Length: 239
Image 1: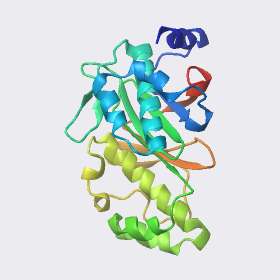
Image 2: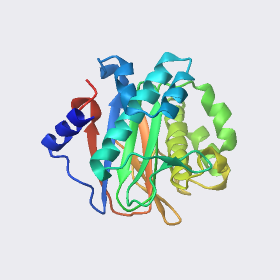
Image 3: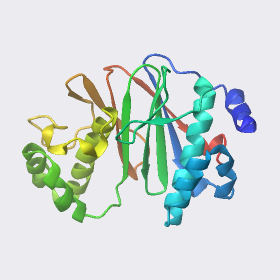
Image 4: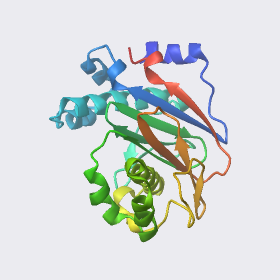
C-alpha cells in the first residue's frame, strides 16, 4: 500500500476543497498485473465476497475497484474502515468525506466529495437495445414520451441519459433501486433533444460526466457549483 501512496503524494494530487469533486477512472483493460496482487488490500470479508463472483470480469472489477477505493480513502483521510447502510451503500463514519462507486463494462469510477453526499452512475453505450422497452416501464410518462419521440438512432442514448441520472439521484439518497424511478423526472417539461447541462431535483443537482465517448454518466450532489477533476487510476497504481 505504501508504495502506491508514495506515488500519489509524489504526483501532488490536491486534497478536496468544498466545491471540488474528484472522479477516479479505473479502466480494467489497462491493468497488467495479476488481479490477485490487489487482494492484500482487502479484508477477509471482501475476499470472500470476491470469490462469490463466477464471471471473471466481475470478480476483477470488484477486486480492483475495492482496492483502489481503499488506497484513495487512506490517501484522503487515513481511514479505510467501511460501513454499509441497509440498502448497501458504503460510507465512512464520522468523516467529512463522501464517495460513491459505479461499475460498467470494462470500466469503474469512484467519485469523492468533501462536504456533500454524492451519487454517480456510468453505463456503456453498447448495451442491449431491448433495455429501452424493459426499463422505460419504470420511467415517468414524460420521459417515456420523450424517448419515443427522439430519432431512432438517438433513442438508446436518450434512455441511457435518463437511466444514469435516475441511478445517480437514488444512489445519492442512499436508496439505490429501492427508490421508485417513476416518482421523479430527470428531464425538463419542454425538451426536444438530449441536453448536456445540469438538472435540478429539489435541492439536488445532476451533472453529466465526461469519461469517454463510449460511456454515459451522471453525478448527483447538493451543490449548484462544482469543479470536477478526473484522474486515471492506472497511471498511479493500476499497472
